[in-house]
Amino acid sequence: APAEETFNFKLAENQPADNPISKGMNKFAELVAEKSGGTVNVEVYLDAQLGTENETIDQVQAGTLDFARIN
Image (cartoon, rainbow, N blue to C red; front, top):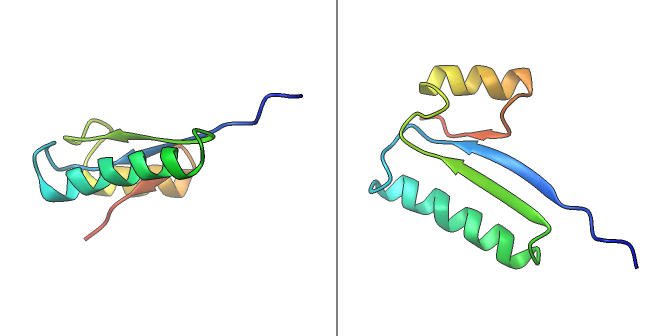
């Protein structure tokens, strides 16, 4: 049987890891992997690793980032 296709997504958050929003982002990624049987993965980038809120919104619009939270 052919291997199942996997999907990988990037999610950016500008808050630190101990922030409740960041904890929720990590929980979301965990649940997505669990519920999809590992075929969908969400890599979470915290602490503005991929840029400020405005920069990550621009990245989503450009198609280089899959998810970003906005206020």
